[in-house]
Image (cartoon, rainbow, N blue to C red):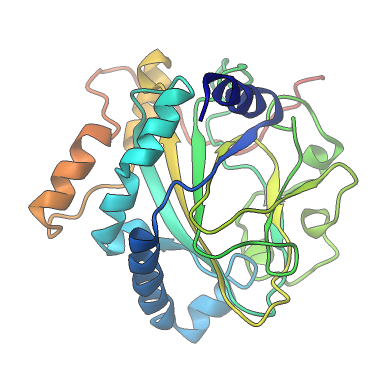
Amino acid sequence: MTTVILKEIREQLLTQGYCIIPDVLDPSILHKLRQVTEGLLAQQSAEEIKRQRSTGSMISISVDPVFAELIAWPKALEGLASLGYADPRFTSGYVISKPSQSPRLFWHYDYACWDDPNGFGDVPQQLFLMYYLVDTTPENGCLRVIPGSHLKDNPLHAELEEAHSRQLAEATNMELPAFSLRPDEINVEVKAGDLVIGDSRILHASHSNESNERRTVITLWFHPDMQALTEPVQGFIAGMSTKVPEDWPQAAKEMMAPLLARYDGEVEPLKWNRHRPARGC
């Protein structure tokens, strides 16, 4: 990509709250990820499927070392560096797969550090990296976002309850505002292997999957410039980060090591808070 295109992508991320870098994953890693995720999804119990009716699944990446390769994928890290984030830190990730004929995913934001005075800063503290394993459309449950909602108040903010509550995850009441179609939403359609990067504060959801095939995305969370954050936030990030399983192969651990979030200070970390205050704009 040219410098001009990269500048436009970065500007979109900062002002709109999301961007797309095309063709980040090659066919070989896509094939491997499809095989692994299909195996993991086949092991879900009926209760787990019911519990995640809206999301489809929430399977931690810590269950298989193949995800270390994805977390440390060079082309993705190069993409982040090209946007100005040369030293990102990984925190967690999930396999989120909507089965055929499943309802919309509820509106929510991922950010959980609202007690930080810099929570409304123009520069993102946390990014989600989404890798869809199939091409996405509104028919099979593509991503929906409300551009600019990572920085500005939106009427929907005041209508939302705690994200990932049981009522929302099980989609027991589709009349809730969290499941609504919004006049200012846009669809984010991508090809398998593209990388969607989003500010974790942006309001996002997905369409229902009306197709006859599963729609799987692997979502990873990174802090793009952890060292620039205050110590209470750094402590919060380190405390919430996924731990690399002891039984993972050494090669996987070595891939992960430079990307892990760490904090060695003694300042008390901020507490988990997903209740966004009104900004007044």
